[in-house]
Image 1 (cartoon, one colour):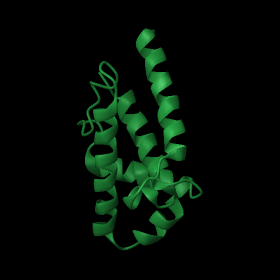
Image 2 (cartoon, rainbow, N blue to C red):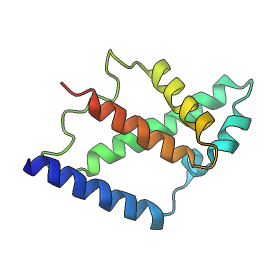
Image 3 (cartoon, rainbow, N blue to C red):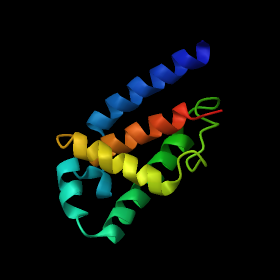
Length: 115
């Protein structure tokens, strides 16, 4: 129960910071821009996903001890290609959000896959 409370507190803090933090790189793109830019350009979609992997790795590194330590960013149940598809589908459904928001949803999905 305590870990759940700590995790919720961190999520709220991260969400508050995300509103004030200046995100740079591909994550600063809107989903609408992402959807348009990757059309017929799989190399660019991989660049976006490389940003996503760095963002999620950074989130793991910043998490306090005992929180999110057991998240596997490349689990067998959700390999990289499927993660890319997850983010793409999130952006297709949520064009008014940012690419970073779709990546955050992926991170939460990976958290739910923990053993």
